[in-house]
Image 1 (cartoon, rainbow, N blue to C red):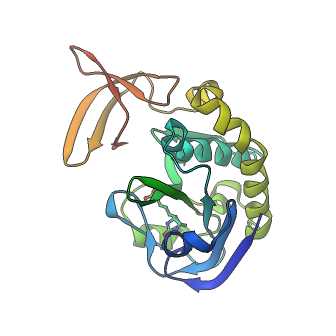
Image 2 (cartoon, rainbow, N blue to C red; image 1 turned 90 degrees about the vertical axis):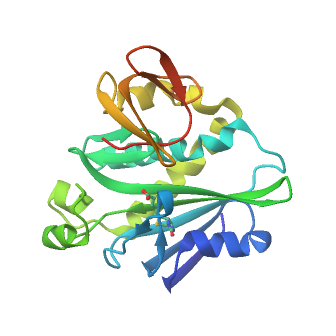
Length: 240
Ligand code: BTN
């Protein structure tokens, strides 16, 4: 596993996308600070300071698309939950890949593909984890419910230890996940899901869908009952 470290960078995901051609499979790019962090749905990922995690995995599994790739961000959310559990907190997952503690978001995951024509060149799988933040500063950054691991454990979190554990846990099961897919995660993922049997709103591009979240399929899709039909959703985000 090759590692690339920056004291400061615009975005580890952007660096990964721009340099994907020259980077080997399983490269890990991480930074102390990020000035232009990229988030899902064209949002920004705010830098809460140098004691937080900003990291991207470069993955080059094969030249062709596979169903597995769309589940990689869910794989990473499960890995993150396992790492967080070792810090004695109880993480939950909000479909598809948000990780929460006590109902507050602690991390964000962004998978970006790099293609040339119809060829897949690779995937940049980025993750930001709030490890050490000031409760007051969090409120200034956003009105959304967010938290950091130091606030949940009442102790300072060593970023290097956390990063090493995350990378080791990620690569330990990576080949198994690539061969077995989401089915391998299904039970753990479902038992950590905070949205099942609840009324949810799903944002799919500029459209919103309401219903009861019934189930997670063996492919990681969300089964939503809209009052009439069971819909299978494979794109979008649960808003609430
Ligand atoms: C989200 O919107 O929830 C996803 C946020 C992903 C943020 C991480 S931080 C490291 C990597 N580099 C980026 O620019 N974004 C991801």
